Amino acid sequence: MALNLDSKKVVVEEVAEYAAKAHSAVAAEYRGLTVTELTQLRKTARETGVYLRVVKNTLAKRAVAGTEFECMQEGLVGPLLLAFSMEDPGAAARLINDFAKTHDKLITKIVAVGGQAYGASELKRLASMPTRDQAISMLMSVMKAPVGKLARTLAAIRDQKQEAAA
Figure 1 (cartoon, rainbow, N blue to C red):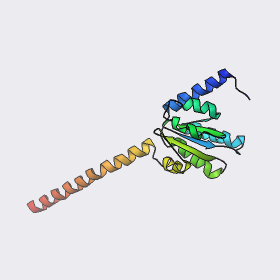
Figure 2 (figure 1 turned 135 degrees about the vertical axis):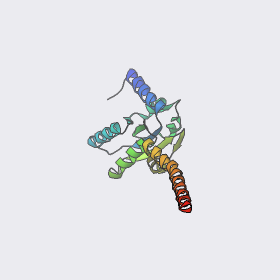
Figure 3 (figure 1 turned 180 degrees about the vertical axis):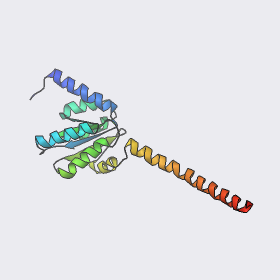
Figure 4 (figure 1 turned 90 degrees about the vertical axis):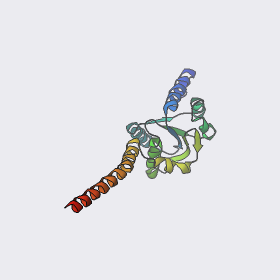
């Protein structure tokens, strides 16, 4: 279904709004996926905090202009869907990576984070980034380790002094 000028402006504004707030983006070719598979992908995207949109490349280029994802413009060729991570940087990459494992027709073309565009080979690296909660947990365990060691050392010194006094 062809879009009139007003509809195109609305699509560009919507995608630009999400692109301005997103942490990272993934562009993937969806040629060959069925409607059911795309619906399943969209459902999973909503559940994981990823904005997913199939949009014409000319409109996508206008939408990402002026955002940190402007670097993706040259690679927007062919039937692509855009996935923007809204909650944590690795969410879109995890979504596309996990879905592509069971659907070989979904092919990653561009991964963008921090104003840099990367090839599909960087998808796994971005997908393996910890979520915010996982990162906090890792940080807390690193911070807790020296405190535990100090407590054990102080307890050993206390025990030695008690033995010496007795």
